[in-house]
Length: 251
Ligand SMILES: [Zn+2]
Image (cartoon, protein in one colour):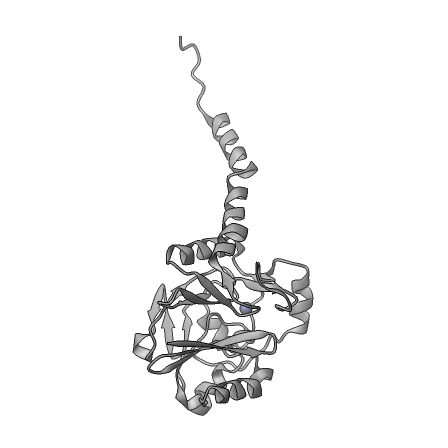
């Protein structure tokens, strides 16, 4: 089994090649020519794809999904929570985690070619039926319906759950960084912890280079847990003590 990375105008799409070929994300619509060139470089056309798997429904990841479905009859799979976004053709407003997000949002596409998915999944989806070994796992955070492709090699294609580096992956591309946008930010770390428990070692993001789980554990998961067990946890303990019933006259 091979994983090919297709760099598409600052975002990454991936092709998983087993018995058949699954395309994970498609890049934005303006990267269509590069997507087709990238496929041609590994000897494929849209007609060779058994599935387009959307890690989530943003214009930067599914900008060419409707086109591939229409032109080559490739089925599209998306998590149920993101299916309405795919059908609407408009990025849902997301909470920005960083001021740079405002700029990126202003620069980026927000509308895309809308369509209905052919496969809608919930917690998991096996890729066996599409000719590849791998399982799609629901990893909410960036969007409510974000999903990650977990491969038996210890690799995972994570969409925008994290980014690699800064300035669109131009600086320190292998450094785990929180994405500019997150619809449910408090779920990002839980989703990463799930991937850690599943034995993922290398994370392939939608922006930037390959991330090592060791770094993600140290710099994102553990740091978040430290914060949770720090002042906030102490305040909760304090509140609980205050609420403890006081028994008068007991001696
Ligand atoms: Zn996104």
